[in-house]
Amino acid sequence: MRKRSTFGNRFGTVAVVGGSVVGLGNIWRFPYVAGENGGAAFIIIYIIISLMISVPIMLTEFSIGRYSRRNSMRSFKKLSDNPLWQGVGFMGIATAFIILSFYSVIAGWSLEFLRESVAGTLTNSSPEQIKNNLDTFIASGWRPALWTVAFVVSSCTIVGLGVTKGIERANKVLMPLMVIILVGLAINSFSLSGFKEGVDFLLRPDFSKITWSVGLEALGQSFFSMSLGMGAMITYGSYIKRSENMFKVAGTVAISDVTVAILSGLAIFPAVFSFGISPTSGPDLVFITLPNVFAQLSGGYIISILFFFLLFAAAITSSVSLVEVIVAFVSEEFRISRLKAVILATVSVTAVALMCSLSQVPDSALTIAGYNLFDVADNLSSIVLLPVGAILIIVFAGWVMDKDIFRNELTSRGHHGTTLYPAVRTMVRYVIPIVIAMLFLSKLGLI
Ligand code: TRP
Image (cartoon, rainbow, N blue to C red; front, top):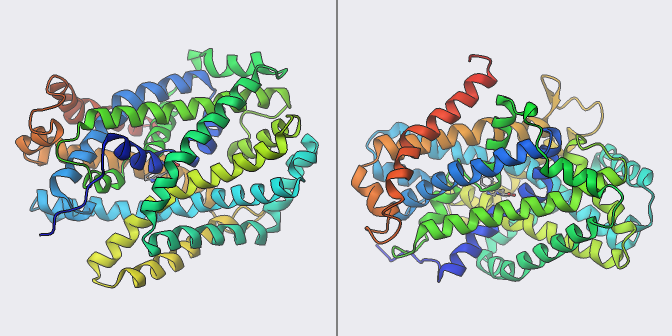
């Protein structure tokens, strides 16, 4: 077999994994979910889960991928004779579709906001106008739909042209730029009237707000943000060098991911309280909050353009990792050319994403049990599919996969993290499955 290409040095590995991990999950989803779940208490649980649960899962996915050097479905095939485990890989493909369907809608919004920033209309509006503009935009149906399609076609084209590498290289510049802008906005928050209220909301926990359901939301948010539970990190692991210290990679990625999320919270919540916006506004939150900040910032015109461009860039580096999962699977399993697989992916993802986009029009018939398809896809993936996928992946690694293979791979043949290994194994075999199972059972009202 031809030697599989691998990532370069550690910075390269972290940058590529970071491209998938840092995205709308940090900047759009984290603030709105934190807002709906009461703020600080949620954030503390989210940080603990990210470091104690998500890092071991990321290490596990990396290990499976690096050992087998295959796409996620084939990884399971290589490691176990029981074909049922390939179902986990298959579930990952379905999850990729569902995530892309609502992800593309929000990425489409970032394009519309980029357009409005360039036109100057965004920074010339009052808080009411900003809210009304977004509502009118969504209610039109066709405008968000067009941007959604534009985004899906761009992601798929990047994958089709095989220029993902170039995009990831660009990311080494774009991601630090995004961090700089977020730090700037967080500093600017000090000058806002709602600063104290915002920081209290983010940092002063009200532990009475902690419920099982908040725990499950925090877990889902962490998995979504770190791209876990559907095999994306198995695929990425297959490109990691055998000698690489995966503990350092996963640790750095987790800390960066949490940092970007918190920065985004610091940029947003003081503004939320300054402009009288409700923290529980839902998926709109970032899009109705930040334009107000830009409107009163000197240089806001340029900064708004930069921000929405970078938001789009962060979204596209994440979405190409999802499209790639689908394209690799379709072309390898159905033995069709990559071009055909890309076309198939473009058409099918466009179809599901369009339904999510149109489901947001008020009184749309595209609902399930009273929720529009967009909300269903958003919640279903984070609260159900990713946690279920994660449980299956770690049960596989902890109980099915050969113990020595797991140990060898995780520690790079005894070179790294040997002291941490027993703790990770215990987490993977017992603690994490039990915690996830308990969160589910309580959500279902069974305990
Ligand atoms: N983590 C990305 C974000 O925060 C989204 C994403 C990309 C993802 N690939 C994934 C989520 C795989 C779950 C699984 O925006």
